[in-house]
Length: 302
Image 1 (cartoon, rainbow, N blue to C red):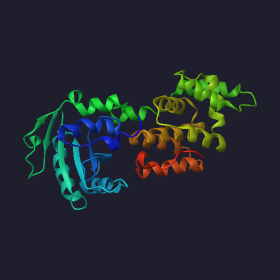
Image 2: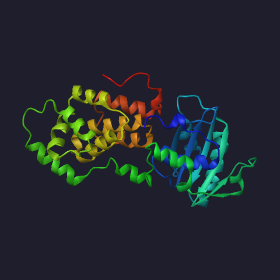
Image 3: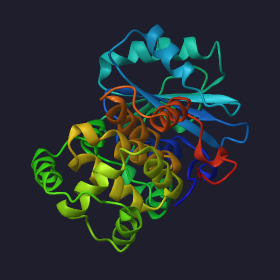
Image 4: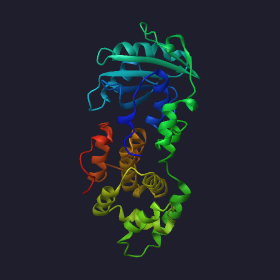
């Protein structure tokens, strides 16, 4: 799987609602989602904000997150109970001042309603939705896109595994002085589907604190699922003082897969320990800019 967003086109509310969880990386709850559309209704990017601010603040956040590629329209979807409906309606009026509002949908439970006054689509009378039967969702699943059950489940992918961290600490204490030449062996094992042992993980954690090794690993990162699994696993298992390097690689892999929500939480884990290496700062800047991976013009080599 490489670039899902350029090939995802919005043709109906059902298409849109089926695609959103997979393009976000999780099923939204109590959130507002903006879907940025090109002139041909191609989905350029998605962004989500929890419902905990005013309509004005939420609108500002979502407009600032519009992608670098020019947008023709924006679809706004609110997921939550009846009290959020006035906030969503106000957001629709505000955002329409900056970008034409193509769709304004409110999803509560398994029911979706279009809130645009002049709209005559099926959703204007309310429609039942079932993401499990959506052809778009099915295609994105085949393409290797994952939709986790919640934002919290997404955060869990990079959360520390305290037991594994303790095992890695023990292995670090027993390390030999020379851990050179490890990266190729680790990548080879991971590509075969083998999970790293604590004895492999400890020297990897140490060697990724060296800039040259980290940049070499960054240049080898691709959008393959085995790399996603590898760097997320390493991020969870290394002690916090070693997490910046693996979390940076996890974020870069997620970004290359167009899993922007996952890339964001991985970046937060990477920079939590401090400003970090220049590569960490570079990856964080790219992720924050919401530049889609298909805009990358050359291989990610040093």
